[in-house]
Amino acid sequence: MVVQKEFLDRAHRIVWCTVATVGPDNRPRTRILHPIWELYDELTGWIVTRATPVKVRHLTHSSYVSCSYWEPGHEVAVADCEAEWVTDAATRQRVWELYRDAPAPLGYDFWSVFPDGPSGESPSLLRLTPYRLRLADVETLSGRKVPLAWP
Image (cartoon, rainbow, N blue to C red; front, side, top):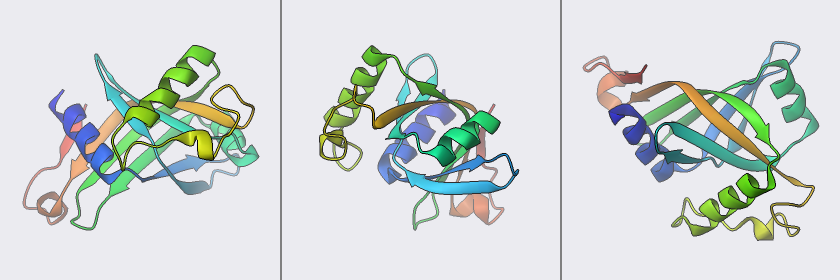
């Protein structure tokens, strides 16, 4: 749980991450997104986003994503995850409130972007289930220390 806790702390401090998917042409595509993470028995990530045709096509082709956080001091946190669309209204509402109630800059009120709320047609919800985590910093990137990883 040490690696998961450190990952969550870094991700919530850095906030924005690069999320990579792979499409049917087997070419990667990245976009900047704003996940929020929870750590109870296991680490779970959530992304409120639009289910654009590209995202849907890519996640249909391969449900795996890589979420990469980086900050100028070279603290890095990477989560390789399985991603799935969540349509359950109660879960969408709970995650919407999780974002709303989180302190800035992590917290965000999606009403300004999605005026129909979490049950509207436009916002979609992705659940991220990590299968690998990697943490690095200047010491690990320079080879002076072994990076933290899970599993």
